Image (cartoon, rainbow, N blue to C red; front, side, top):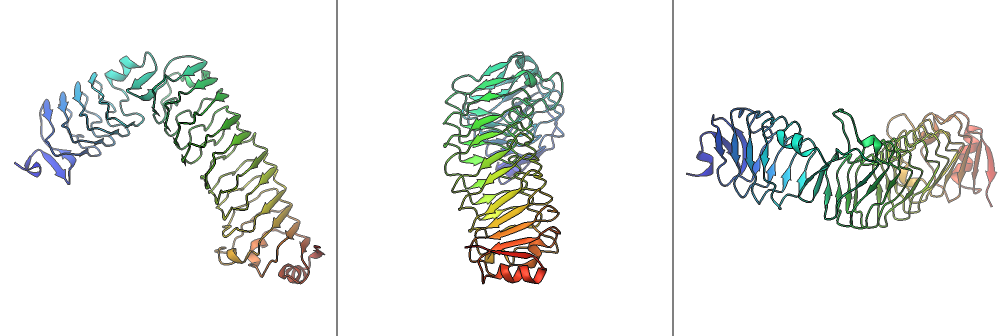
Length: 402
């Protein structure tokens, strides 16, 4: 019998899409490589499940709500258990975790008998730190841990959160991956050292924490969005080789007053410094090509910015309602002439902007760049360049640069 001929199973291209039968002891047929999302939403009477070798992924909510499920046999081929895969399996108490397992998502075993028994201490699944439960000021993740699972220290479901007690976390040299929002909400966390083995940091890992300083090692190749959003961060060392500062990385970091973006960075992502109201000094690298949407929006303390000469794109609202008083352009601006769509401006609402300085041989630029900046009074540039004409056409004072 071929795999597609099992009448109770809906299987397509190796993915078990759904189960339509009724039984207590379930043997999933050979040939399945993935158990699909909500595949067993009708399997409430199942007590035992035997998953064959060859299955690599158990998808989101695959067995969620199977309240009678007591035992699961996981194969040595299994690599990933996704979000809420066994959520609400209240009777599930016996699980074997194969060494092949590479990733366990948050809430995969939420409200199971296994987790209720395990969470008397911090919970590990092989070399994965799955969840923090102990009440302590200092947490030492055990040697050999390779992954900190998503939301491992973040208690989004309430029930007294122990994360707020943590002041220091010690990570082992074996660590490679920190899952998204792993330390989110650790409001008193002020000390953590990322080992030089870590390759990836997920989105929001240190958001809403008390972290003030951090060094990101050169081993890091991937950084998620909003990593430090709403944290107390005021000092950071970037990893070498990074070419993108991701979306929202420092959103609402009120303690951040100055920052130097390292050479080699080409893109500042959307919202990267939005609402950093106390940010006063920013040094941008010559390698920078893109300042994305609302990158510096509402940075009220930022009085001056130097835009390097390789910039190719500054979209609308990039500096929306910032405190800018002077903008210095080092390039010709020719690359961004056609990159300003609609009727708005990258400097929309910059009502304190008074001085425009062009240090390079600036050619003609799109007048919409500064259309919503009513306080501009002075243009500084080399004589005979387009900014001199722009100043004359708009009634601004012109100051020639030597």
